[in-house]
Image (cartoon, rainbow, N blue to C red; front, side, top):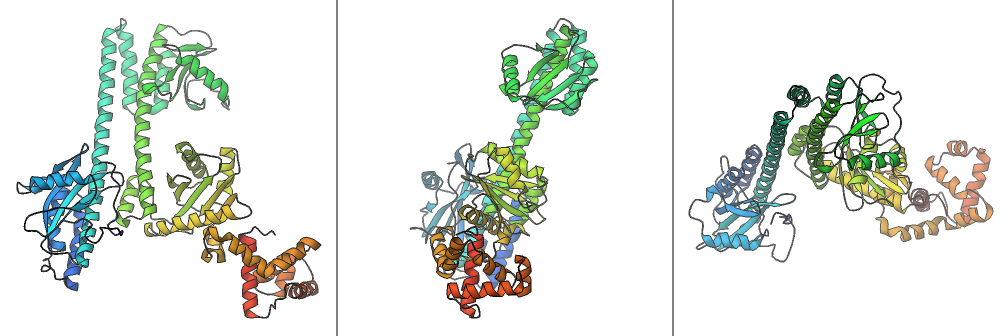
Length: 593
């Protein structure tokens, strides 16, 4: 039930006439119209105002039962309805809302469970019309609202009920996300508590209590202060007198404390690094490799990095090993905590990107973007990236995000089945992002489409379509790899979709095919001359200068173009068709025969 597909209240279907979208609650409900009678314009406007006020109240409420109670209380304000019952989803099951009281029939409970996440009719005595309406989030069902009426709802009542349901479902989604984050915070706190308990237990059982207590206290205090890798290596260097360092799992330096730091730090060898990790992983404790005493930082078995001491003189004793092990334990928990937080933030950023592409409430979008530190008030560009020789998985998405960040683009990132999408606050610089990804992937077999600027969240769904259109133009052009900007497509922005390329080629050959063939046979440039002539607005001097030829040479070529093609450049219709043909030849067909 948690994975039920979100239903679109405005979609058509075989049972859609009676399948109402779901509905609402109220702060100061307007009077409902009489049964069977459409609401007056004044009543309709008041109901909409009530819904607008209600949406703020719903989004400010973080308790699912309270949200559903507000919605049930507001049902009568949007039409001749009555809220029969409400249900909240918890742990894969539906529980009656406290607002139901004791009057809702057990048959309603049974019917709602039979629907299994879908909308459907319900039967309530003395109420001719009744529906069970699912309250859906992006990935799951949050509950149900059971609404009845003593007559068939009007179109206006259906619209108001649909609006109320969407507000209620959005509020439930927000409350669910908040509860999930709260539970995660509790779990993280529990892990920290367990860590502290484990460290205290170790102190009590190790023989050399004084030294162990000193090591434990120092490392724990460092970790509790949130200093990260630098604080741990600094404390470890202070305890042992040896240079201490942290590398990531790929061998890149993250922190160094103590003397003799190499500058520059050696570039890691991937093969040797993997061999070293496997060798250390087979051992139970710290391992000596050349002048290093090192151990892996691996919470829950996943290697996040390497903690090491530089011990060229072989001075390390059991106290040094103990300090290294304690430091590795604390660092592992700290890095795991930071990774969990990063994964939560990444999930929130991806959810926001998905909602923006599909279309979402502007106020909610601004609030959510501020919560994750992204400025959505700036103009944004939608960037669609597709690489033919790379699977569109999390690894490729991370590659795209890393390349975009390196180009100075702050963005929200998500992915689809065959492409990655960036909601970026900056326009990519010409081919810079494409070239960066070519280096990252090791191949130029990719294409990028970029939208025109989107000045508000409402424009992002349109920008997504523009970026996809630009990508489609690039993929079907003669040069199928590279970057295409929607605002540089010119005329092609209004031409047919990508599956009409045969018709476009036929059109081009109808109007300038003879010129293309002439150029091919005689190694001439008649088509290019005609294209430049149109690009310069028919100005002889500018055209001749751009082609680096004399004005009389240009005049001769234009006369030859008239003779070869049989078209008159002075004729308005011929001129328009010739200009369109040259434009398509240049942009879509790659400027070649």
